[in-house]
Length: 311
Image (cartoon, rainbow, N blue to C red; front, side):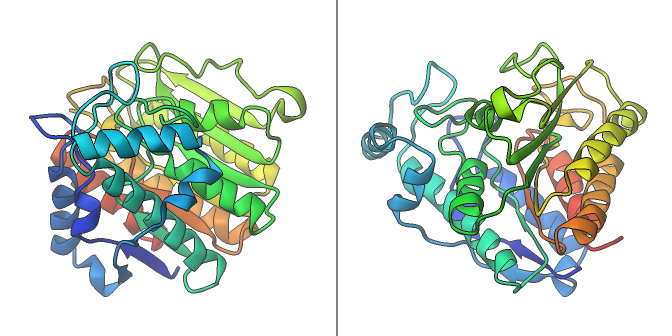
């Protein structure tokens, strides 16, 4: 399957200073393994995209966008209740993430590629009016709004295998029946949401699947839950699939207690690529998400790419 990978120094700027676990070293860890596997010979490597602040308005409130701008210029302050600090240039760095995710989406919709991978992306905790969990702007939410409002898609699947629940996507689209949501996450950790009985509200009841996983869940546990995810997606026949593949669910992450191996990430990329080819003309966008063990980032994310390529 034709696949684009977005890589470049501009994406690495999204990272917090001072020994923060979400550091600027995360992109380098991904890219070193990408080079080692010689994946550039099998994909089309694309530069990150520059963006205008207006792209943020489709998801975020103007008041919150302005707060991030001010805090970015000042180089300090909190963008939520305590998890997400501002840093100098954070507005531009976060805007680049969103613009790159949108560029990848437009390339897919234009037929220039079947699939795309954006490593520093998948900032799934940001809400419309606040940051959350190291996420300043919600690129996935912005992509979903674009797919609905510009491209008129009515069955958009969002799949999340990050150890943390994608609350910024779930709650902002909880009442939207056009967003097919499936999230496997470690229970009882940040943000403490995503119970199994949260299946959507109003007309969207049944379109959302939350699967809390016990700490210590391994590849066998992944496989059992993943079968439910694939069944949920197949029933919906999505027109576009978004994967948030946070590597913090791989064993050895310092912030979580999951024990998947990178093999589960290969499986996720492969199975969603096959599902996208069956229902969505191959349209699959993968976003890196969390992950704070640098080796896991390199292995997990590149395994997703290998899976997308049909490894």
